[in-house]
Amino acid sequence: MKNFLCLVLSLFPLWAFSQAGSDIAPVKSLLINNVQIFNGKDEKTITGNVLVVNNLISKISTAPIPVNRSGETIVIDGKGKFLMPGLIDAHMHMVLAGSTLSQMQNGEVGAAFIRAGEEAGNVLQRGFTSVRDLGGPSFGLKQTIDAGVIPGPRIWPSGPMISQTSGHGDFRNINQRPVSLGGCLDHSEQIDAALIADGRDAVLVAARETLKRGASQIKLCAGGGVSSVFDPIDVSQYSEDEIRAAVEAAADWGTYVTVHAFTPRAVNKAIAAGVQCIEHGQLLDEATMKLMGEKGVWLSIQALDSEGREDFTAEQKQKKADVANGADAVIKLAKKYGVKMAWGTDVFFNPAINKNQNTYIAKMGNWFTPYEVLKLITSDNARLLALSGNRSPYREGALGVIEVGAYADLLLVDGNPLSDINVMVDYDKNFVLIIKDGKVCKNTIR
View 1 (cartoon, rainbow, N blue to C red):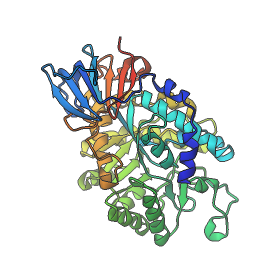
View 2 (cartoon, one colour):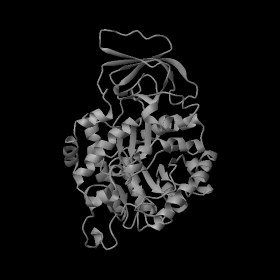
View 3 (cartoon, one colour):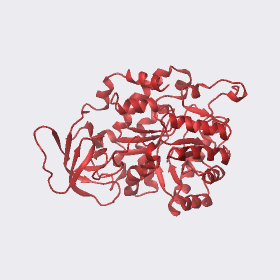
View 4 (cartoon, rainbow, N blue to C red):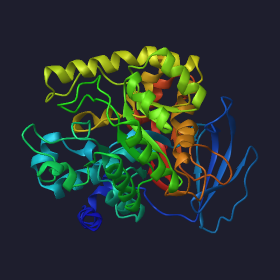
């Protein structure tokens, strides 16, 4: 399957490069002068200059940085604009976001991967230089981006979301039997979007197989979901022992397990089993949030819209509204108890709204100052990515920060998001320079 994805994506048309930014070009060194530097960690900025050599930040200085002007260094005048680390989305589905559910289930598989390749370029043009993929067949997409065949963000892939029968990752229709009862693999399993495993031994094999294929972390479905049809939002999924099996397999590979879960019962089981990150959690109570703070468990939160997709049933629309409306109380509790937080968008099967990815940044302004939002989507998210340890695909430099030795993933903004976080929404206008891995992906500085 992995080779097939690479083959499909290698056929992606060359015009995608022009759509993603006509200034894509590898350079040996790059000097960005006269910029207001937000380093991803500190609220105070400095006005200075940044030198990039190959794909890493080599020097940061308030004084002029001398360079060899023989043509090997590209010099860019930042004109006093706001330089920050590239954005990080900690909860994406890179392949699933490019198609509707109907297209994924009924359409040509190759077409879905072509759409995913095109959307990867769009994600980069929104300023997102790194993403954590929390379920879907993204291994081939990642390899193709890393090889420079198409533009896109760095991807920390989870591979297929691992689910119990009747769980959030079970996309079978009501009349399909599971494999364990004589049925056949569902289409979602055949394309590695999901993997159904029941019992400790099966979960252990599923986690090991996913790690073998290149997963940076393991994603389990531990509770009911919105987009899934047959599991109510309040149900908890997997036994503590089944979850622990995945945790043990991940720990043996030096990485971690994150779980999809909304409710106290689901999350408390996951914490007891050793899970280090909870995705969503919008229906959690105060006692559970307090426990997460005490145990150092991460909360990967999303500020979702309350409206459901057009293909949702009435029950699914209600589930979506309940989850969206629960964010306010949970985020306030997380702040109260010092829970480590990350942020992501979790948009998929609805390509029409992908262009709104940056609006979800502004939504976080309901609970955080502009500085806290910027820190959340850069260095805080990078700290979560670091939990993958040696399973991280990108370990040469730091991420989410502007410091010497960090990856040159940079974003130049026309406007000051520390004063107005809404500057981040109109990315096409306000993001005038996008650099990923030391390469200029967009340059519209005027």
